[in-house]
Image 1 (tube, helix red, strand yellow):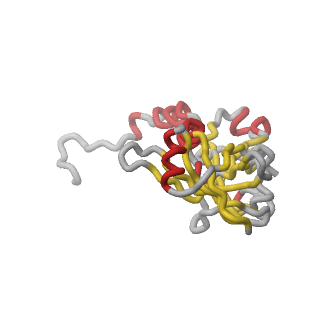
Image 2 (tube, rainbow, N blue to C red; image 1 turned 45 degrees about the horizontal axis):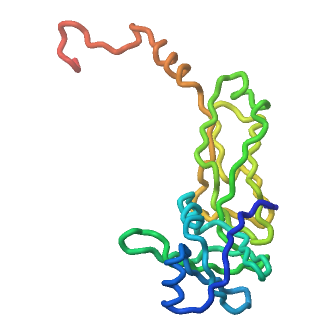
Length: 217
Protein backbone atom coordinates (compact mmCIF):
# COMPACT_ATOMS: atom_id res chain seq x y z
CA UNK A 1 0.00 0.00 0.00
CA UNK A 2 1.10 3.51 -0.71
CA UNK A 3 2.40 5.35 2.33
CA UNK A 4 3.60 8.48 0.59
CA UNK A 5 0.35 10.18 -0.33
CA UNK A 6 1.30 13.86 -0.69
CA UNK A 7 -0.02 16.36 1.83
CA UNK A 8 -2.17 19.27 0.71
CA UNK A 9 -2.25 22.03 3.32
CA UNK A 10 -5.20 24.39 3.68
CA UNK A 11 -6.86 26.61 6.23
CA UNK A 12 -10.51 27.19 7.01
CA UNK A 13 -11.85 30.22 5.17
CA UNK A 14 -13.71 32.72 7.30
CA UNK A 15 -16.90 33.58 5.50
CA UNK A 16 -18.28 32.52 2.14
CA UNK A 17 -19.37 34.27 -1.00
CA UNK A 18 -17.62 36.52 -3.49
CA UNK A 19 -16.38 39.02 -0.89
CA UNK A 20 -14.54 36.38 1.15
CA UNK A 21 -13.13 34.84 -2.03
CA UNK A 22 -11.78 38.19 -3.24
CA UNK A 23 -10.18 38.82 0.14
CA UNK A 24 -8.50 35.43 -0.01
CA UNK A 25 -7.06 36.12 -3.46
CA UNK A 26 -5.75 39.53 -2.38
CA UNK A 27 -3.94 37.76 0.45
CA UNK A 28 -2.20 35.32 -1.89
CA UNK A 29 -4.63 32.46 -1.32
CA UNK A 30 -6.88 30.40 -3.60
CA UNK A 31 -10.39 29.89 -2.22
CA UNK A 32 -11.80 26.40 -2.38
CA UNK A 33 -14.21 23.95 -0.85
CA UNK A 34 -14.07 20.33 0.28
CA UNK A 35 -17.26 18.30 0.20
CA UNK A 36 -18.53 14.73 0.33
CA UNK A 37 -17.85 11.91 2.72
CA UNK A 38 -21.12 12.41 4.58
CA UNK A 39 -19.81 15.64 6.14
CA UNK A 40 -20.88 19.25 5.55
CA UNK A 41 -18.92 21.19 2.92
CA UNK A 42 -16.03 23.20 4.36
CA UNK A 43 -14.74 26.44 2.74
CA UNK A 44 -10.96 26.55 2.51
CA UNK A 45 -8.04 28.72 1.48
CA UNK A 46 -4.91 27.26 -0.13
CA UNK A 47 -1.59 29.01 -0.59
CA UNK A 48 -1.48 30.26 -4.19
CA UNK A 49 2.23 29.64 -4.84
CA UNK A 50 2.23 26.14 -3.37
CA UNK A 51 -0.90 25.20 -5.29
CA UNK A 52 0.52 26.56 -8.54
CA UNK A 53 3.69 24.49 -8.03
CA UNK A 54 1.56 21.37 -7.57
CA UNK A 55 -0.47 22.13 -10.68
CA UNK A 56 2.63 22.58 -12.82
CA UNK A 57 3.88 19.13 -11.84
CA UNK A 58 0.90 17.67 -13.70
CA UNK A 59 -1.57 14.90 -12.85
CA UNK A 60 -3.21 17.10 -10.21
CA UNK A 61 -6.73 15.96 -11.07
CA UNK A 62 -5.77 12.30 -10.74
CA UNK A 63 -3.59 12.55 -7.63
CA UNK A 64 -4.87 11.50 -4.23
CA UNK A 65 -3.95 13.99 -1.48
CA UNK A 66 -3.93 13.92 2.29
CA UNK A 67 -5.74 17.14 3.16
CA UNK A 68 -4.37 18.76 6.32
CA UNK A 69 -6.40 21.53 7.93
CA UNK A 70 -5.63 22.81 11.41
CA UNK A 71 -8.28 21.72 13.86
CA UNK A 72 -9.64 19.08 11.46
CA UNK A 73 -8.91 15.39 11.03
CA UNK A 74 -6.74 14.55 8.03
CA UNK A 75 -8.79 13.24 5.14
CA UNK A 76 -8.00 11.86 1.72
CA UNK A 77 -9.27 14.03 -1.12
CA UNK A 78 -9.13 14.27 -4.86
CA UNK A 79 -9.63 17.38 -6.97
CA UNK A 80 -12.91 17.54 -8.82
CA UNK A 81 -12.63 20.98 -10.37
CA UNK A 82 -10.35 23.97 -10.88
CA UNK A 83 -11.59 27.37 -11.98
CA UNK A 84 -9.01 29.52 -13.76
CA UNK A 85 -8.63 33.16 -14.74
CA UNK A 86 -9.92 33.52 -18.30
CA UNK A 87 -6.84 35.48 -19.42
CA UNK A 88 -3.98 34.49 -17.10
CA UNK A 89 -5.03 30.82 -16.78
CA UNK A 90 -4.17 30.92 -13.07
CA UNK A 91 -6.25 29.06 -10.45
CA UNK A 92 -9.02 31.11 -8.87
CA UNK A 93 -11.02 28.40 -7.11
CA UNK A 94 -10.64 24.69 -6.35
CA UNK A 95 -13.14 21.94 -5.54
CA UNK A 96 -11.99 18.95 -3.48
CA UNK A 97 -13.94 15.80 -2.71
CA UNK A 98 -13.46 13.67 0.41
CA UNK A 99 -12.94 9.97 -0.20
CA UNK A 100 -13.76 7.06 2.04
CA UNK A 101 -11.25 4.21 2.17
CA UNK A 102 -13.77 2.10 0.26
CA UNK A 103 -14.15 4.68 -2.52
CA UNK A 104 -12.67 3.82 -5.90
CA UNK A 105 -10.53 6.40 -7.66
CA UNK A 106 -8.56 6.70 -10.90
CA UNK A 107 -4.92 7.45 -10.18
CA UNK A 108 -1.58 7.08 -11.97
CA UNK A 109 0.62 4.32 -10.51
CA UNK A 110 4.38 4.17 -11.28
CA UNK A 111 5.82 1.15 -13.11
CA UNK A 112 8.89 -0.50 -11.56
CA UNK A 113 11.16 -2.87 -13.53
CA UNK A 114 13.06 -5.57 -11.64
CA UNK A 115 15.55 -8.38 -12.36
CA UNK A 116 17.32 -6.73 -15.29
CA UNK A 117 20.43 -8.75 -14.34
CA UNK A 118 18.43 -11.94 -14.95
CA UNK A 119 17.42 -10.90 -18.45
CA UNK A 120 20.05 -12.26 -20.86
CA UNK A 121 18.80 -10.07 -23.69
CA UNK A 122 19.72 -7.01 -21.61
CA UNK A 123 22.72 -8.23 -19.64
CA UNK A 124 24.75 -10.11 -22.27
CA UNK A 125 22.80 -9.66 -25.48
CA UNK A 126 23.15 -5.90 -25.61
CA UNK A 127 19.41 -5.43 -25.83
CA UNK A 128 17.70 -2.17 -25.00
CA UNK A 129 14.72 -1.75 -22.69
CA UNK A 130 12.36 0.76 -24.28
CA UNK A 131 9.84 1.95 -21.70
CA UNK A 132 6.58 3.04 -23.32
CA UNK A 133 4.74 3.81 -20.08
CA UNK A 134 6.49 4.59 -16.79
CA UNK A 135 3.11 4.96 -15.08
CA UNK A 136 -0.34 3.54 -15.68
CA UNK A 137 -3.69 5.04 -14.80
CA UNK A 138 -5.41 2.53 -12.53
CA UNK A 139 -8.78 2.31 -10.82
CA UNK A 140 -8.06 1.45 -7.17
CA UNK A 141 -9.53 1.64 -3.69
CA UNK A 142 -8.65 4.88 -1.92
CA UNK A 143 -7.63 2.91 1.15
CA UNK A 144 -5.46 0.42 -0.72
CA UNK A 145 -3.37 2.30 -3.27
CA UNK A 146 -0.28 0.37 -4.47
CA UNK A 147 3.12 2.06 -4.49
CA UNK A 148 3.88 0.70 -7.94
CA UNK A 149 3.23 -1.95 -10.56
CA UNK A 150 6.06 -4.48 -10.92
CA UNK A 151 7.38 -5.73 -14.24
CA UNK A 152 9.67 -8.77 -13.83
CA UNK A 153 12.27 -8.85 -16.62
CA UNK A 154 13.72 -12.24 -15.66
CA UNK A 155 13.67 -14.59 -18.65
CA UNK A 156 12.57 -11.96 -21.14
CA UNK A 157 14.04 -12.36 -24.60
CA UNK A 158 15.15 -10.08 -27.40
CA UNK A 159 12.16 -8.74 -29.29
CA UNK A 160 9.72 -9.30 -26.40
CA UNK A 161 6.87 -6.84 -26.03
CA UNK A 162 5.41 -6.48 -22.55
CA UNK A 163 1.70 -5.71 -22.45
CA UNK A 164 -0.44 -4.74 -19.47
CA UNK A 165 -1.98 -8.24 -19.57
CA UNK A 166 1.50 -9.72 -18.93
CA UNK A 167 1.79 -7.98 -15.55
CA UNK A 168 0.31 -9.28 -12.28
CA UNK A 169 -1.71 -6.36 -10.92
CA UNK A 170 -2.25 -5.60 -7.22
CA UNK A 171 -5.46 -6.98 -5.78
CA UNK A 172 -8.40 -4.69 -6.42
CA UNK A 173 -6.54 -2.62 -9.04
CA UNK A 174 -7.52 -2.53 -12.69
CA UNK A 175 -6.40 -0.37 -15.62
CA UNK A 176 -8.65 2.48 -16.64
CA UNK A 177 -8.03 1.67 -20.31
CA UNK A 178 -9.85 -1.60 -20.97
CA UNK A 179 -10.49 -1.56 -24.70
CA UNK A 180 -6.96 -2.61 -25.69
CA UNK A 181 -3.99 -4.54 -24.36
CA UNK A 182 -1.59 -1.59 -24.32
CA UNK A 183 2.21 -1.85 -24.31
CA UNK A 184 4.28 -1.12 -21.22
CA UNK A 185 7.76 -1.76 -22.65
CA UNK A 186 9.69 -3.80 -25.18
CA UNK A 187 13.18 -5.25 -25.51
CA UNK A 188 14.84 -4.40 -28.79
CA UNK A 189 18.16 -5.24 -30.43
CA UNK A 190 20.88 -2.57 -30.42
CA UNK A 191 20.71 -0.25 -33.41
CA UNK A 192 24.27 -1.12 -34.38
CA UNK A 193 23.27 -4.78 -34.71
CA UNK A 194 20.33 -3.88 -36.90
CA UNK A 195 22.57 -1.70 -39.04
CA UNK A 196 25.18 -4.45 -39.36
CA UNK A 197 22.53 -6.89 -40.58
CA UNK A 198 21.58 -4.44 -43.30
CA UNK A 199 25.21 -3.86 -44.30
CA UNK A 200 25.87 -7.60 -44.62
CA UNK A 201 23.81 -7.84 -47.82
CA UNK A 202 26.23 -8.86 -50.59
CA UNK A 203 26.45 -6.80 -53.73
CA UNK A 204 25.35 -9.75 -55.86
CA UNK A 205 22.18 -10.06 -53.71
CA UNK A 206 20.92 -6.68 -54.92
CA UNK A 207 18.52 -7.09 -57.87
CA UNK A 208 19.81 -5.50 -61.07
CA UNK A 209 18.49 -5.00 -64.56
CA UNK A 210 20.41 -6.80 -67.27
CA UNK A 211 22.45 -4.46 -69.45
CA UNK A 212 20.99 -3.82 -72.85
CA UNK A 213 17.55 -5.15 -72.04
CA UNK A 214 14.58 -2.88 -71.34
CA UNK A 215 13.27 -3.00 -67.77
CA UNK A 216 10.75 -5.74 -67.22
CA UNK A 217 11.89 -7.98 -70.13
